[in-house]
Length: 273
Length: 249
Image (cartoon, helix red, strand yellow):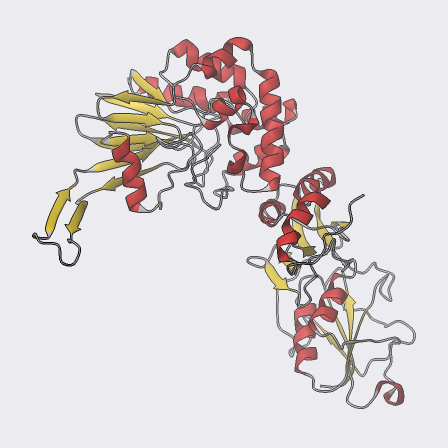
């Protein structure tokens, strides 16, 4: 079966429509969404309504959680004062716009979805706020996949798509007894099967260096992953950002597809709230 | 090199870097003066709000202020190197110098081969905007984001940006960027402000460009600057132990 995985829609209706059109054109019927339907973008109700109307299985993103739980969900995820002020502005604007039905929908979303050995999360199995960056220490990254009971872990949150495979991994255990204690030393080697992290990038706020929306297609039979880049009407979204009064740099970032993005110093932190 | 030397050239041609390097090399007394206002033909001179002067005095603490525009060996001492900076908006060389301005030599960027050759821009048609940031302290990560946005066009077509900024650990930096050069110069000041309240050194941002969104600039900058409470939070661990906390109102 071939299925599509998308993440980080961020209230960008033009981008979501373009990606869904692309998926439909390819004849793919199974779609999974990794959350962050709202935040930064100008059309939160429209995007949530579209996802609901399409019946797309969706897990909860960090922005979805914050809208429900309030901004105390994870204050430690803002890497700078400027990002925090802008984020709070976008949060309050989004919270004021969102209809009760759409808010209830976001509140109902699960933290993760599972289909056999495929697991779908927004950030990581630990938290919607944890970043699984492509250069994360390999053992820690593998731990996230194994602890979720997954062969392939689909995530988003970083806004940069990537596929990371863990091959020929092994763990060697050597048990040496304390001095004077009789008995042989124990040694064991565990060969790990191939594990994989697939990051779907971002539909609504791409940060891969271009302006095109990204999502991934997974062919389970061939076990291949394709990162798709879809052009959309960026100016339509930029105009809407300025019209509703969100910070103009949000539109500027989107229009230029700058790779630059603020990240926390410790991107893999686990919030202890 | 010694005597009184007039150094002229358009913004971004490398005047300040060249002047700093000559003054640092000189073994005798050193003096500097930056001319402001209009040039001898009545054209306005490039505005920098005192940034170059403050930076040079930081780098060379015994740098003298040249009161006049001529060199009086009796008053200034033998072996003086006095550099007078004449910032211009364009590459044209002024035909006449101001009355009383009688340098021993006049070097002009783009004309004299002993000066480095650099790309320069004609700034005559550009808007110039400046913001006084005295006593303000930046959140470093926010400053990083803001500067990226500024020089990449988030607030209009910026051709030149220069700033003296304060960080919460007491350090200060001169940021110097020009559209025709790659990257920003981040030059650290030698003086470090003590961890007691707001620094008193000159701090300012100067931007030259077209279609500048000054409202957006000010709004973003306001979101980058630290409040008294946050600054105190960051300075407190830097004070020697046992030092009393500042009085609260």
